[in-house]
Image (tube, rainbow, N blue to C red; front, side, top):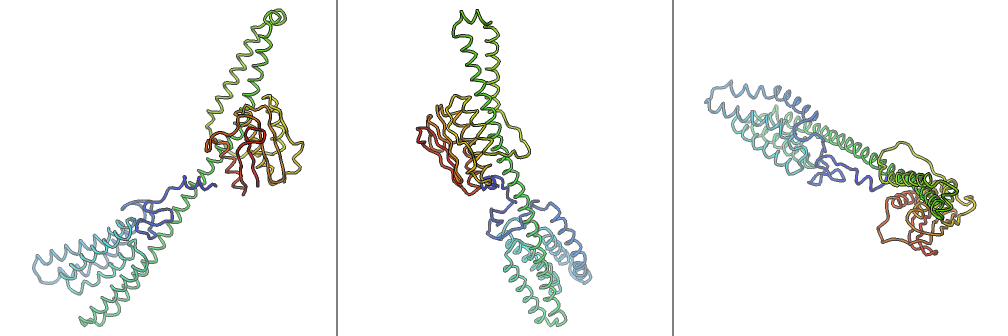
Length: 407
């Protein structure tokens, strides 16, 4: 898989950058279901509803079981509803919005809780374990969670001791610490799991993109070469027919009927047009991987060059090429010969093979402007670099273009 393909394929989870960090610089949950939807928020809402019913009941009864002004009861009830509503919604609302949003949500919860305690009294300190759980679920760094939960537990201990409630002085802080730390671990586990799922999706998409790149490259290397040979042979046949039918009209009419020759020339021209059109129209995705061998490509290159009227200076054997390099050198040879036939206008082509290098040179028009190389040379460059080698393109000793790969 190439680095370029990976970069192009990556689709990040919402709120995360390339390293899985959110906009505030910490590792956010990276959940794919935004806002308050999805299985994660649904599970939190269900758990929050059960805990609210279990723990808010006694505090609610405490408000309505005592004698007091109706306005006070309504205000206390409203503050409880506002606090527990914020407790249920804000952790999920802030889960993808970074540290600042998390601190803001904690500030809102703290303010609502302070109103509850002011109206109900110290008995409402039982809401602090809820506050600890909400802090743990916020997208905050771990050290911030620990500090806030510790401060909350210390405040609970001091308040209970100062109010003379010795029975709850240690039990409530212990409950705040235990629930808060447990929820911190639970929240981190959820975030890591979601990050792993996002990474799996990202890698799968990168693999698909890399495979598409490989298929496109192989399509160009395989079909482009074959169709080029067809086009060259059709052009050669058309010239031969034109020469046979038009060199001496008198002798041609006496010895052979010129009409079939002209019709054959037209059909061959159509084949040539179809072959060239196919080079531009191939877009289908194919499966599998067709192997290439430098020995077979050497034989094909000889045929293609001869058909194009290009003098071929080719090695007699490929014994010097190690087995591990024969496929790669075959791709380079195929691309180089194809470019000679299609673009160079050359009269001579020279191929050299060694144990570590393959080169294709011609005496044609030479290299174009820098950066003007097409998909074929780009694919060859990617192949050779993946094998730990280098590609060299430039002016040939013959006066034309030179393509060389060394590994």
